[in-house]
Length: 468
Figure 1 (cartoon, rainbow, N blue to C red):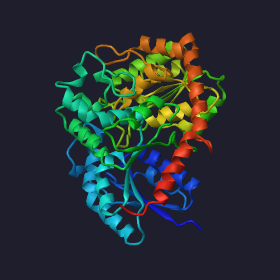
Figure 2: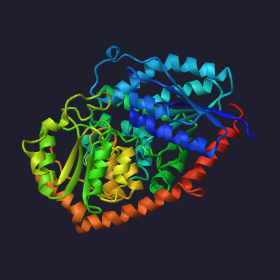
Figure 3: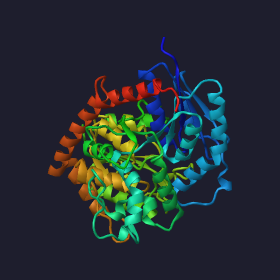
Figure 4: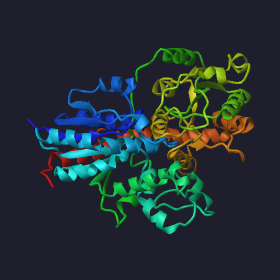
């Protein structure tokens, strides 16, 4: 019988960060049952119910330990969620170290796998004679930027958004400064300093696991591997997404409604687990959906002037009361608006769904890709603008509406882009390319597929590790 290989896993706060690293862990123990994983989970305030319920479904060889919660009142007020996530990890470091020491007193630890926000914990792995790995929940392109960021910081003076020429990250499509991740839009901000610190911290890992697959980002992955100044090993193990999520009460209503719609006729509209729009933008989106004449299923959220207001907070307002007057009555035959949540994986896999207007969070992109659903990009925060560029300019599987001088996407532009995707010539080409990506993603996860082989290579490294 194979000896048990012990791994510690440290996610960061936020359900969208917890899910990919957990799904990776589930796949690892499914393919390699001799592994035993312990999740050490920092949290900002009491652990969310959805996180607790989700972790209760894990197999017996994955344990989870919730650390003492960090009180949000003890942290400075921050517009950008990344600051709060990073501070939560920093305040949790003594607790993390204590749990790690307790684990290693019982059995040696082969490796520590940390979310990118938990990079500071990599130092503990060295102390415990274990290997250290970052789990990067985004694309290889986003990882390339992370690793390139210290060099860019040295080479560019002034704000990146003022650059007149695109930034060329090795192996990636050119990127305008204004499409860099949100923390890079103000170089004097704490968010930027924290972002730069994380990017430097990545280089101390023995390896980085990336939630992507070779066939989708071959050029970018090759550029990472061929960088002579980088001593990190890279492991593309994706696409890693959550399958078979629990249908909540309002989920079945969505699916019943979709059952009654023609094939490929519905545009699904959702901004992820945390994205929010202003009241003006909610109005324009509603009127644009109506004007397009296309069927839609819209997961609506109460408006806010912060684009990520719902990311670490629970909303209480009924979002339907913020829609334009008469909108629900006028569109009752055309679309369905549901408050706050829908069973996204089931929606995207439904035969009546033919497009996805998305905030471009990486989890949503991969879920859409695995179901072959083409995209309209509507990036809000984090690295979502960068993802939008990759989808439209690189992979050519999405359309991106234009924003006016006030930062608003107007109803006519929304209607035009929706029609183009759902029934236009351009939309047909996008649909074909997305179908090819769907097939490539499925192949990567087969027994002899690129990501499965990469996972086996990684498992073998951990199994054979005898201490630094």
